[in-house]
Structures are given as structure tokens and as C-alpha cells.
Length: 147
Image (cartoon, one colour):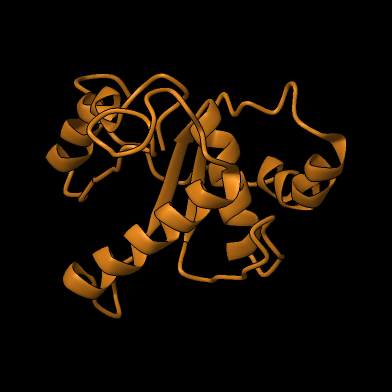
């Protein structure tokens, strides 16, 4: 998930690096950004974004996935905030959209935009964030000579 004012294209370099290391990588433009529909620069709501990413993931897995396919979610800035809500639902909690989901095997948040958001919402994702704090990656990916 891209950040505010961006599109999925900003992650193209990551897609190339992951693909070069044997991983599939795909993304969508949030409503109002990139090649999506919607009013340019307007976020219709976090719930709509959660629904969009869950629908996209479901359709992707139906078309390309199998029982061995692992699905990870990555979000940057605003996309990190939305990804954290999606993952909170995915980890057995209830997302702010009111749904639960267990399709994701992991999540990567890059500078998630938590700064100005409602404390009540942050309290919903805090247990998940505290758990992630204790997890460290166990595999390095070579990013063009750097690990």
C-alpha cells in the first residue's frame, strides 16, 4: 500500500528486487491516486481502503495462489496505517471495518502514519504492534549487493 499522494508505481523498484530474488510482488493504487478511480487526492475513508486491499488480495489468491502461497502485506506511510488495520483484522482481531481475516502471513510497515491518528484507533492495533516489536526477520534479501 502506497502513501498519500503516491501510487503503486513508487514501489516498482522493490517489485523488481523481490522478483529478482524469486518472489512475486504486486500492488494497487488506492482510490483517488495513481490510475484508480475516485476524486484525485481524496481518501474516501480507511474502511474503503481496507475493503479494496482485502478484495484485491482475495482475487489475486483465487487467480494465482495455491495452498502453499504465502501472502504478505507491505505499507508505507498512510499505506502503513491502513496495512496495520488490515493486519489487525488478519491476526484475529477486529479491524476498524468490522471484519476479521486470516489470509495474511505477515506484514511490513514502512514509517506508518500513526502520528496524528485517533488514540482509540491506535489502542486497537497496539497489541499487534507490540508483538511485531519482538519479531525479527530471519532471512536477508540481497538488494543489489546490499543485504
